[in-house]
Image 1 (cartoon, rainbow, N blue to C red):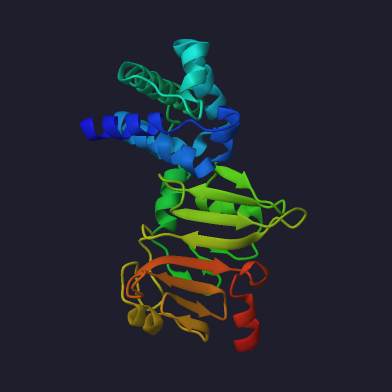
Image 2: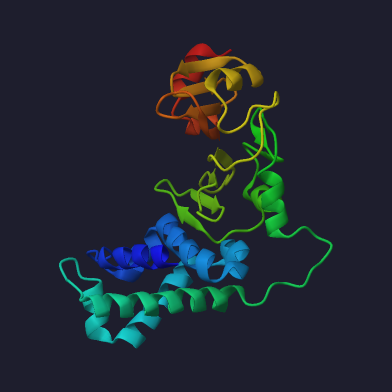
Length: 273
């Protein structure tokens, strides 16, 4: 707990940013989700599995409204000014107020846990997905090219998302908002164009390769033709890419990408049938 408080005070001391603090909070979707998860994970574990239900825009408005009301305009403004310095007591007051506001603003949105039903809960869907097998263009029943409704059917709804510059959307799942990231193409198609799985993915390749396995094992356990083969990347013609650690030895991320959204598009066009 002491380490958590110390880290939080450092965060408060460094959070001064130019511009509207509410807009900054809403724009930095992943960062906001990570900070929210840190508080909830330590102080309210009972809410941890429901954070995908939190609308980030409303959450940011709620937290900053509570901060301004409790701290007063002067301290609130100084705490978010770029060059402002707060005293230790002011930092502690900001931390305590912010912590209470974060918990309250999550509670306001998620309320009481839903009554149990025969249908799978979002948590059950997520856990099932995280143990799935990665096959050609598909993982856990979610396939590249599927509609956005298929995403919610497979992984459940999430309110942690952001718009992309081209008009598409990027949806985040997991306690730190980046365990699973699914990118959706712009309207009118709105189809899955990329699925990214980080090191917490517990599933496997068709041959049993898993996160943390060595590069050669992953290549032996995933069928198909390679489009590009670098020390830190193994990219297949079906759009599946395995990303390895800086030393090029251990698997740490998997990405499935449609051709038009793949940074290795040229390699696929050049080296694949």
